[in-house]
Length: 391
Image 1: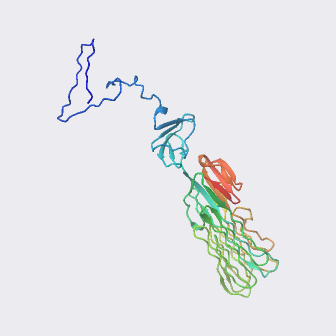
Image 2 (image 1 turned 180 degrees about the horizontal axis):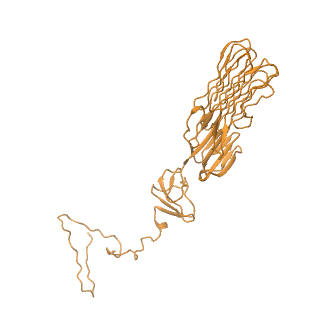
């Protein structure tokens, strides 16, 4: 075994004392296998070369001129990262390789993480309008508006639905954006539904097509918002409007016809049912389309998804186009039936809103991008055609 030697200083006169602990238990002091100087209990360690004097010298701290990324892989949670250029400081709260989460510890809000929230407005294409014809025997309902799903602020979705939960995007993941086209009418008795719009798996249903008839009472068609029913000469009874899709849009109006002027009911809107139509011996107004829903997700309030107005047929009568909405693209309105005043439905739109710091800048499909929207600095991305957004 190794020998223990206590050697006094040749010129010293003091006494070196080792005081035993006040215990009956054996105590062992193990000295390092190296030559060195023991630190006094009141020392500051300034003479010890093994202790670093900077943050960068610590194994669980990184000092850099840039921020960490989700692919910056520390050995464990709790790792500290200091950006010496910006002064921002981060700590790792999730050390998953390639998907790390770095929380901003200072005044900044730009956490470095794999996911972030995107508020959205997804609007489908409006349903096709009733038939255009100079022949007074055509009487058509209005097209249903496209379905409307909304997660922005506390704004409502269509059909009386509440604001939805924001979309959670994962960085470096591409998401498909689909913008639905408006339904059409071929002026030969055939209308089509509007097409669906979608953000990844969040889908709004296209508006129901208008019903066109040349002599029978017929109900409208279901969709995001239902198409309006139609009444025809020589028929009696009730023609119900098409149903709306829950939390996206309302139903179309109903036609009641027994005598008098046949006509069409209004298509459903995102904010209300289409107006019903009751035939009478006089010339009544057609059913007006259901109201839309306004959203300020783009930074200004815009009304979307108004139902199309129905048509009342009478020799020389004009369309019952009293909704006041045109066929502006990317608003999701339903088509308005009529004679010379026929108004087509409008296509849909998908709008994304996220913090400026989270916007990746990677898209396809040429969307319109506006940064620094609102007091907190948001980026708004408007897709009027299909494409992709990469988180």
